[in-house]
Image (tube, rainbow, N blue to C red):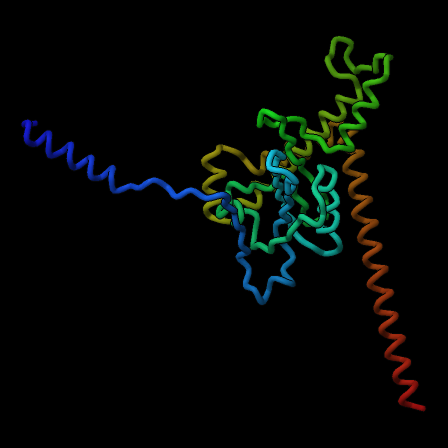
Length: 271
């Protein structure tokens, strides 16, 4: 370019840079999460996010947040999820439930607040809260209870039995690995199945090159191959059946009380 044009271009760029002022400085900022459910329907909405936070007592303490997706509140799922989060040091008084339409819609609006714990429609809780080390990296993904149990097992001096003599894992740890693999693929299958309920979700799953029916088949094969996975599945089914029975008995008890109260009113009217 000619010297005159070069000078003109430089002045133009300088003017554009000058148009952007320095950001204002504040002592604090905050993030807000808003329900997408109409205010009139929020009290009865059965799905949503449980937001747990650790409020630091000093300026040097670390602040942490965790999000849990609850697919359906029928009995006391929100209470049990809150109890699960307390295992990671969160206090129930610092938890808030946000009614929301679906997990996919939550992730689309708040990708920085991905749920690390989930409670499905059967009441089964899965997932773990990341534990952060002092360098800001993710540390052990276990709760306080599980970490303490590992300390107890580490005290044993006798070598645990192995299925394969040259294998790296003893039988108990191998079972834990199989359970963790089954839990992961079950969680992934549930997540992608929910994503496929929307057109955008189906596009994401397709672009990722994942077969949802293949995941379902893989989960079924894991359940049919490893005894530890089979026993865990049976245990969860028994727990669900027991919970359903308790709910049914409670429903019948309330109906009987209502019928008895109605009958008492009729007797008084007859007198």
